[in-house]
Amino acid sequence: MRADSNASFANAWRVFLLEWELAKNYHLSYSLYTGSTHRNPLLERLLPSLLYIKAVALLDDGLTEVISIRGLSFPSEGYSATLRGRITFLKDQTVLANADELHRIHDRRNILAHDKDGVCTWEELKQDGMWIESTLQGFGIIGARPKLDYYGERSAMRDSDEPGILSVRDFKVGVKENDRPGIEFSWTEKLHRNNG
Image: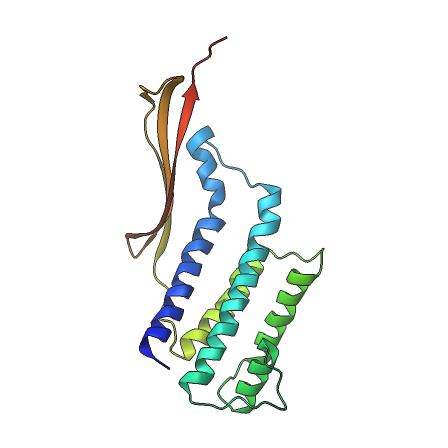
C-alpha cells in the first residue's frame, strides 16, 4: 500500500474523531444562547446511530487497507466481498484476533442501517468505537487517539450598519486536537430592527 493511501485513511479516521467529539458535545452550544444546556431527543436518537454507521464504514475501509498492506490476495470464491467476508478472511489468515467482536459490531450496524427502530446510545458508540479503533491501531494504520477538547465561544453584541439589522454577534464551536484547533464552525446572529 502506498504511504499516501495510509495517510489518507488515517486522516479520514482523524476527521471522524473530531466530528464525533463535536457531535457528542452539541448540547453545550445551547449554553452560548441561554446559559444552560439540554439534550435534544431527536439528536440523541440520530447522532450516535449515524456516527456508528460511519465508524463501521471506516472499519470496512481499514480492513481493505490491511489486506492490501499485507499483500494478501482476497479470493474470488469462499468469501463475500463485504465487511463480513473481510473479517472472516483476516481471521482465517490468523491476523485478526477479535473477529467475533467485529462480526457483532457489523451486525449491530446492519440493524441501525436497515431497521426503522434501530437506535444506539452514546455509550454503545463509545464501547464499539473503541473496539474499532484498537483494531485499526493494532494494524498500524492509525495512531494513538489525540487529546480532544470541545470549545464554544460567543462575542459581545455589537451595533450593525447593515440596513434593517440592529446588532450582531458571532458564535464559534469546535474541537481542539492536542491543544490546536482541529475542526471549527462559526455563524453570526443578527437582531433585526422592529419596524412595526
